[in-house]
View (cartoon, rainbow, N blue to C red):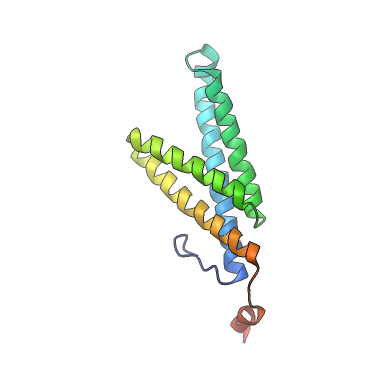
Length: 137
């Protein structure tokens, strides 16, 4: 399944999109955890404010919570908040001229937005069972 062209007309496609969005949030949480581990030494010696570490932990928990909710096919609101945080990270990496980080964040943002779209499609629940059964005929 391509992550830029998601089929939301079937329940399986919408659930797959929501679950991919959950995986993207888990990857974002893992990258945040990696960044916190790299920053830990600077926080310990006082070169960086401990408040930055608190915000990073909050971001990690946000992404983990959004990932769990999107994996269940729910979590539109927390997914939108996670996507907004990804947009803020995207802007900061654009200003820092981090090309690799920018590319990673763009991909994670696209997949997260598609996951939100999948969760919204699952919320409506307007799927035709006959259309899904047509595959097996």
